[in-house]
Length: 95
Image (cartoon, rainbow, N blue to C red; front, top):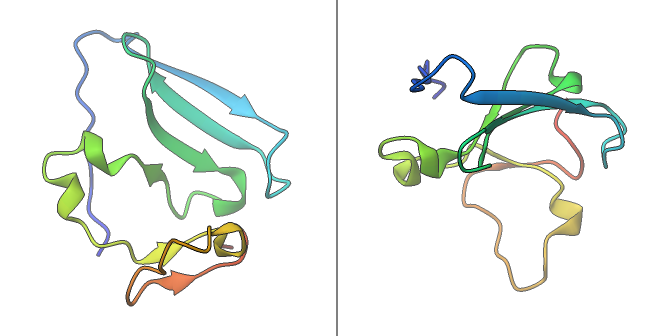
């Protein structure tokens, strides 16, 4: 289930954003990262049209306890990685 997330930073310029146009999906995406450690915080695919963001769950309190609802680019999944149980499987970027 989707939940609202509030991002708290120590300064107004702690997050830097940039746009990638050369992507596997063919659609651009905006990436936001921490200017202190360089960690990607979230990604906003243009194809999502504001419907969803991709957030790095380990950065959230309790984030590793979330169960994924979707898997993307499963056509590129290594043979030794099992599908996530009950997750919707997308060969490409979800639309």
